[in-house]
Image 1 (cartoon, rainbow, N blue to C red):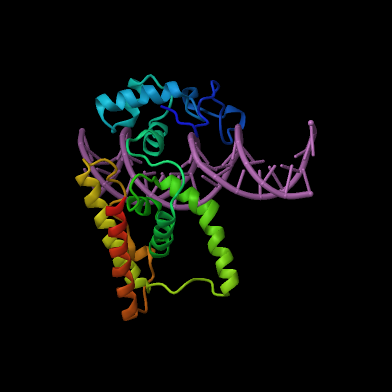
Image 2 (image 1 turned 30 degrees about the vertical axis):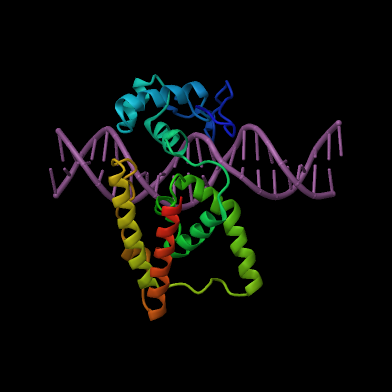
Length: 214
DNA sequence: AACAACCTCAACCGCATCAGA
DNA sequence: GTCTGATGCGGTTGAGGTTGT
């Protein structure tokens, strides 16, 4: 089930990351890129048993991997309806807006972009958009664009979070992660302006339209 | 052609939260 | 209420690819 962009077709799985002298690797689990064979096994088991209890999925599939790794592989790569390839201008715009609104809440942002994963969006942000924004800021001289106040951000975050939750549950419960978080802690809200609420609702309207479009 | 510098993105890690016993 | 295992999230890493010199 590997795609063309997949680097995982390599036969050999090399350990990744810093593992000082194989220091306490539990049972020598496979690490690194996934092979097409592993993908196939994982997909088969998930088809039968569903995407839950990842540890047992790993065992049932005969994969020498931890459940976490299997989950990640499924969510970011094997899951049906994954949209791969270039991020469209519309999507990019949406990511920018959502990031302005939500911050680094990648899973929430991903929840508003059908077929995109949080990892993908995070990568895209780090490699493309953050630079773009830095350049723009340097040119304009202002650190950030006009955006909603923190209290409005908070409301928007709550709303988006709720919507994502609903969508997730209506999609069979899969990906029903990121359901709640401490908004109070995340945003330190003080001042507000009437314009900002308008900004948020406009944004949400636009967002809805885009979702229907895609 | 060879090398260095930079870029991309899959995968890992640590931590937080949730759910069940 | 506490413990423990499962799950989810965001930050980070590094292999491999691309571009520049």
